Amino acid sequence: MLSGMAQPALHVHDLAVVLAGRPVVRRVDLDVRHGEFVTVLGGNGSGKSTLVRAATGLVPTTSGGVELFGAPLGDFRDWHRIGYVPQRPSAASGVPATVREVVSAGRLSRRRLLRRLARADRTAVDAALAAVDLADRAGDSVAELSGGQQQRVLIARALATEPDLLVLDEPTAGVDLAHQRLLTDVLAAHSVRGVAIVLVAHELGPLARLVDRVVVMRDGRVIFDGTPDAEAAAFAHTHDHHHPLDPHVTGLTGADVLGTGWQAGGTR
Image (cartoon, rainbow, N blue to C red; front, top):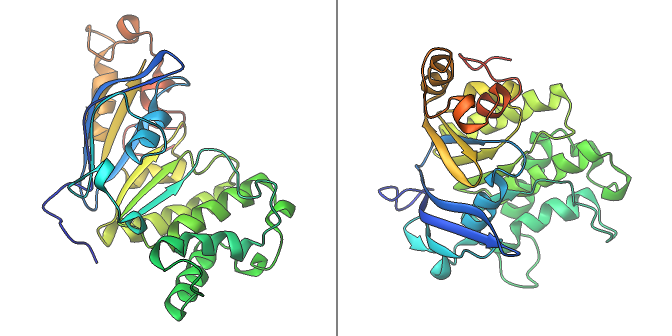
């Protein structure tokens, strides 16, 4: 399934993004390896969502470079290898569509234009719907769903792609705890299969146990990149010493550094 595993799934080097004349991402370096689960934390306006959007070609970069599976972003064509879940529910987007139709859109990058869904496509869509517990709503209009259910539709659309790199921007917003646990099990299975996962979050909840690396951003910069245990230790260290994560130095609060609901050991 995974090819070119010698290369990182995602390589970001010296990346900068300026939007409306304002620097939003400032000289960020980031590698995400196959099978690695990386969470990007930070307060509102820290640049974390813009970073992942730029890394997947959704917003223009100002300088620096991005490589996906070893290919420069501008040359990358294997978009079926990328699954992306946007920050806010937009599944309805004013266009009448059923849940199945939206999730099936995740297969578009894997087939020729106007070609009907093949058996493999239908199987992938069914599996994605089941994974987010929406199989019984497949024929319903997305517009009739709650915000949390629409978010689950977008997660299913990304899963239906059968990606090698899965990028999720606050996927649990509006999703109840039971379905957060369901998503945790789904992502755990993907990670075991070698899928690289990048999760942008304010609150991790059950997902905390999956995290291999924590990247903390503030004011467009990465101020920490390491293991969850190292992050928790670094924050604890600020009680006695001036550490790069010292809230008196950076202006961060404990919630900014650790994320709401995040504690050492990956529990709530």
